[in-house]
Image (tube, rainbow, N blue to C red; front, side, top):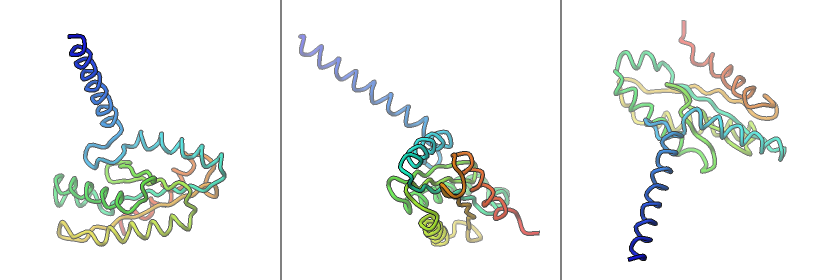
Length: 179
């Protein structure tokens, strides 16, 4: 009798722990892409930035934005846009290292944090990501493209928000529609 009660108690505790882990993970993830969400990314960025400062190692931040996303949404619809965001998120994730941090950062923006990666390494990563985007089979009337903004510690900033602003400045002109 006591053994059965203990076994049931252990089972209930495991179930509750599993539920807690599930809900914690859900709070950290973007539901569409299953990548980290912006809030979780920023927390990881703070942690990794602290490590980079302590060790003196480089860290790079890449922001990626889908070119012409608003037009694509208007012309092709929300389901098309959702599918595109999902496919791009998976392409970005599969072209990064296991310890790189990939997140959906905005509606059509992604953020990638590459610890222990100087600017030169991040430029290679940007090229690999861009190649992955161009290799995606067209899922609409035109080939999709992305623009990238890159910033690296220590040369572009000494704090996470400085790095974010630098990468955002580099990304903005690329996303402006041609006149």
